[in-house]
Amino acid sequence: MTLWLIVPAAGRGTRMQADRPKQYLSLEGRSVLARTLERLHLAFPEAVLRLCLDPEDVHFDPDEVPFARWQRVDGGGERADSVRRGLTSLAEEAADDDWVLVHDAARPCVPLADLTALREALEDEAIGALLAAPAADTMKRADARGRVSHTEPRDGLWHALTPQAFRFDLLRQALDAALATGASITDEASAIEAMGLAPRLIHGSRDNLKITRPEDLAMASRILTLQRAGIDIANDTPSDQEIEA
Image 1: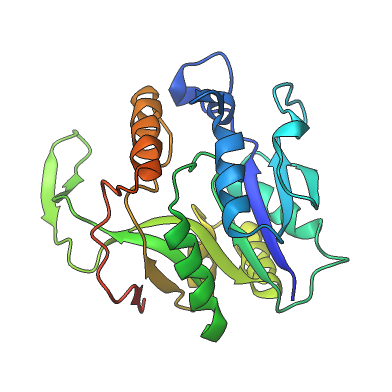
Image 2: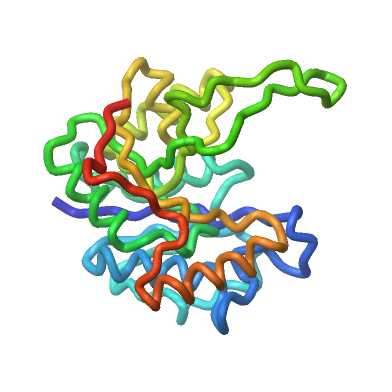
């Protein structure tokens, strides 16, 4: 069974207020995208990669791709569009029950232990799974005036991370249905949930930062430095890493 990776990297990252998309900003001497692909390759060296890029991308350097088998795919306007195009590029090669892992291009700090835990969880999983971290902060619901409406109980609330892993045909069907109905799909799991299915949550580290704002680059650099020293500054993972959704 082939393991497929889809990395949507067609976003322009306007919130970074930089001269290039955030996936091409420098992180310890290499681009964020290069660091992300490097981490994925360490965990899944045999995987086949589909890299979804803006058709007009002028910053991409193919030499930064460590995978032996990979293909560039034109990304879409939204994340779901890019992932769907990545799946379309697999149609002639992927089996219906092959696992497809989707990972954010701007998550270069995902711990190898978390990637291993996700892969191990798939060995006895029918639907799919995603890395996630329990909400640790007090959650406030805002009203239309930008004031606190009420406090949301955080029991059972999780921050969805990536990678998210689903069977090829199931994910394709889920995204097709969501895009056809105009449903709001912020990640692959939400498309699967819209089909009435419950993906498995795999307890992941909050080290798995998504670079979104300028200050996140410095935090990512610090995380990578501490990870190399064997220190996980954000992980309070319990011994039981699998939590059923």
